[in-house]
Image 1 (cartoon, helix red, strand yellow):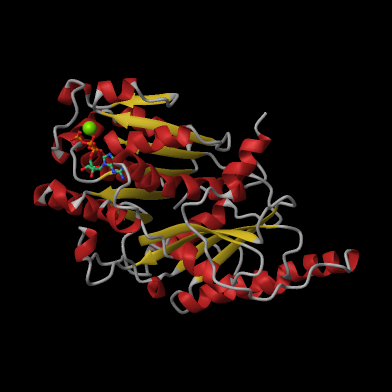
Image 2 (tube, protein in one colour):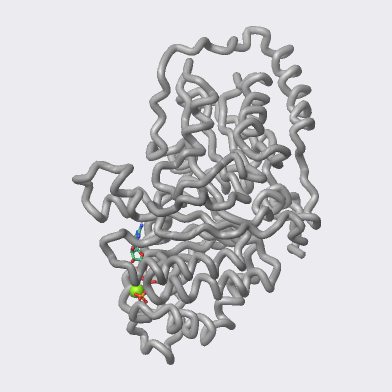
Length: 399
Ligand SMILES: Nc1nc2c(ncn2[C@@H]2O[C@H](COP(=O)(O)OP(=O)(O)OP(=O)(O)O)[C@@H](O)[C@H]2O)c(=O)[nH]1
Ligand SMILES: [Mg+2]
């Protein structure tokens, strides 16, 4: 069972572990952005040199004895031994967190071996965990690809939700001439966007908060997950915004109609209407598996420079049969009888979306000149790579 923490007592502590070279790159990048104070970034590596250049305040060198500080040499077994050697210190950091994100590259030694082990420890400690991992470029060879595949399979056994970002997708989705370092930057930004979206709605007081309980309820649908961010400009279609948020081009192909749950963070101006809010829930219900559990948090940002922003995490997805382009095989999703699911109580079900009605009605009374819904004036041009408001707003609010 998970340890539940009331959001009234304190904002949940979110630990983000970046493991191995790729993981440390990602959290280095995260450390440059304005994250909520309850987000703790933890760089974990066997490679002492890589840790030395990390800008994270918490740096854990693991497996000093087994690797001598020289990396795991593309041996996942060594990576796993290194994590086992340093289990005590890893545990300390896991225990302190309410929610754990873990990220790294599959295909090398440290990330591939240590990430599944850390996930296993987190599961033993009943901590909800979302993993975001990359799989190697095809040109890195079949051996790395096979190691990555085995690593993802192992990770799936211990994580609530696994998001796979195949590096080959970087080639498809981005300009072919983009420099490798910038392509990695975009890949790492997927986690950055979602973390900022999540911490905004979980840690700050939104109009409708997503609390830890909600979060656990959605990620308890074990399996693969999809996540993304999209913005909607005035007059653009809501449906398309939702699709754009769900179809992140840097992510592996997943069949969203299998998603058993979704957590949505909406940022809007005060003018958001009940019909818009309701449509978000309705559209997601149409796009996801029948009976999918959808929770929607809403944060009002009066100065928002677009109609609304959506951050979506869809969970409980089985990988598609044809995954050749993803470097990873299909994986059986753990059945819905999974015990963690029955232990968490959902806060919202779709029929309860009407809760918002009262608020909006009151708003309408106090502000009769509320804007009508704009018509659909043309094609949507959202890019998931745009800098979301979470970032800009937090930067503005930084002391
Ligand atoms: N998207 C992305 N992928 C990366 C990045 N760095 C490395 N990778 C990928 O991650 C895989 C694993 O590489 P590393 O993370 O360097 O390996 P490691 O976990 O440190 O393992 P060892 O060095 O063998 O101990 C590589 O095969 C690359 O495909 C990054 O910054 N972004
Ligand atoms: Mg390394």
